[in-house]
Length: 142
Image (cartoon, rainbow, N blue to C red; front, side, top):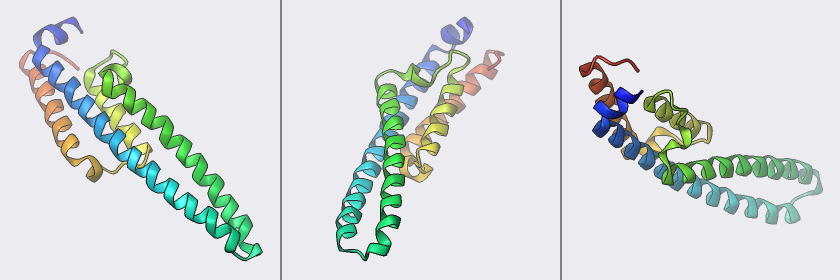
């Protein structure tokens, strides 16, 4: 681990910066998703009053599920916002590449598509590739 941090200091720094950019982009997308879902929720809440009484149970169920989804998104948003300031949020000190994989997995679980963060994805994949090439060049293991 020490060899990785000393010999691959530039690649390690680039990987950390790419991870921060990924988290920033993910936080931006999640903020938009939360705002859009809130707009939809308010429209459904207003429509509930005008709807036939037979549909009120269905609308209430939908609103409860949306509230649960929103809490889940907010949880991920807070985590991505912490990572934007400190790249070690997803790092378990095993390998910096693992932190990137975990961040990408959490973004996927939050509903963020790769196309939503395309520029950040390209930067992150390039940084991971450079880090892996540096490991091979120095004959180090992940």
